[in-house]
Length: 146
Image (cartoon, rainbow, N blue to C red; front, side, top):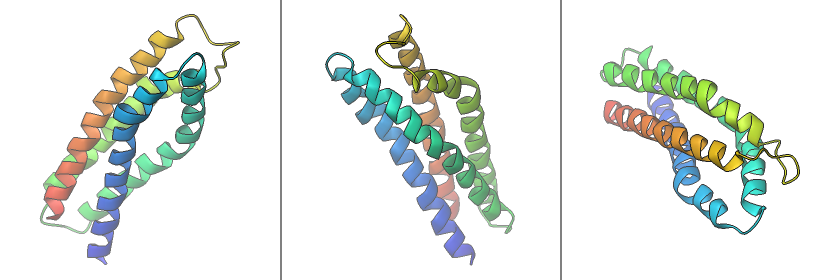
């Protein structure tokens, strides 16, 4: 059972890292390069779509990591550290990214604020840091389970 939990946790966190990395370094640069209002509309739609899924994904990853620790695994120290980093990513999300995302997902070309690009740039900077944090968590998790 523990092996199944380890594989599930590794896949869950790994796919989450891949999605967040893709948002930071593939999707948002593509959206930023689109003409006129297309990029802003794409970000609003992405904010609605991923905003609904990511909280469950982040918390699910954290719960799975802590379940491994509860099994007295030999790499428990690394898993605890990975779990702490996942907690940090959730706190960062709630305090820094979600407020911007909640505003951005309601914007249209008609109602967006004048500083919408600056707000999206701020979200991007916070997101880069969050991606680094979850990559570190994933790395520790894989090292612990190896």
